[in-house]
Length: 254
Ligand SMILES: C[S@@+](CC[C@H](N)C(=O)[O-])C[C@H]1O[C@@H](n2cnc3c(N)ncnc32)[C@H](O)[C@@H]1O
Image 1 (tube, protein in one colour):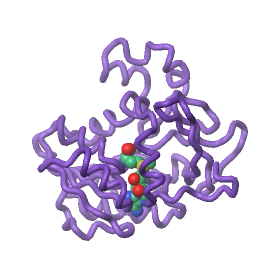
Image 2 (tube, helix red, strand yellow):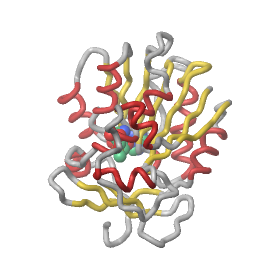
Image 3 (spheres, rainbow, N blue to C red):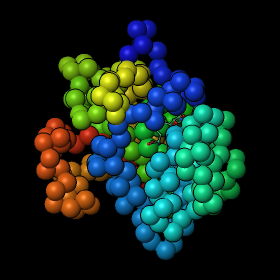
Image 4 (cartoon, rainbow, N blue to C red):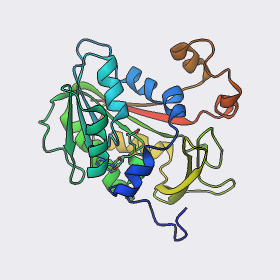
């Protein structure tokens, strides 16, 4: 963690270049597939997806590769978008540079599904995080879903396979800076500072901007096995995750 406890500034080249070195296996095992599932990307009436805070584009890319979709991938970081374009540029993904919280390049009710994975923890104030949810609500068509994936806020201080949010024994309140450790694929750990939001705050943010139905789910071992087959979660690597699920998914339906 930055010795001063300052939150990580995401729109720098330094952070983007480091981000692509972080081990994301846990995300693919316990997180992103359940976002796709909750957004019902396999359905024929889900044709346009927006990924708010797409980073270097891997999740938008997978969504477009595995489903019959057009994807709008949005980020505030020019370097993240440059990496995304170089790695995953393809006709069905349109990349957009965001200037703040708004999505002016998308009309009202113009998308079928929206997602923000590990993004609301990158903004320091609740009104900013809620503004992202408000824009997702605006651009979604009635019946469309917005899925928000984050580290499970109830599991601070737990060392997962490749990350830890918060320190053991420490208590965090909504909006507090929280130290986060992430493991790179080379085994080195990197320290950043995010913002802590409790589960109820994610729920409130989506309810407050108008989502008619809001629910939360925590992908468990049984879900991982259903998605990935009987061997999922059986490895020693996931011993902690089997006891303390690493991610919380908050979903709003318009
Ligand atoms: C932790 S990364 C996650 C990237 C990607 N969603 C993933 O799961 O790999 C968070 C991303 O959100 C972006 N971000 C932060 N605030 C944003 C905002 N207001 N609008 C769009 N992107 C934002 C950051 O630049 C960064 O690329």
